[in-house]
Image 1 (tube, rainbow, N blue to C red):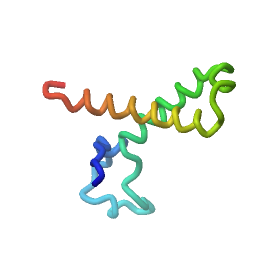
Image 2 (cartoon, helix red, strand yellow):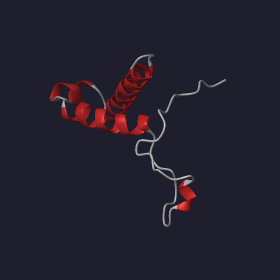
Image 3 (cartoon, rainbow, N blue to C red):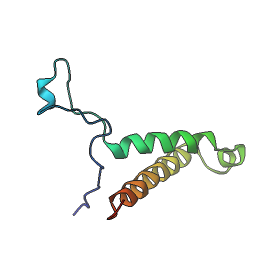
Length: 85
């Protein structure tokens, strides 16, 4: 059984009854979670040190960076979803 992940809705919502009504618009787009994760991943990659590269192999480093980016996104979506926010 898998746990549903709160994707946070669309990152760039459109003001239309249905996204299919917009010419040349193939899909509703990226989720808020994916958008936040890409921003967090940029920061994590930028702060990777030579020591990190030496300590972990490439696959481990990429996986840890991706997990960390998703964790930041999940934390922000959870915080935004709290009552009164």
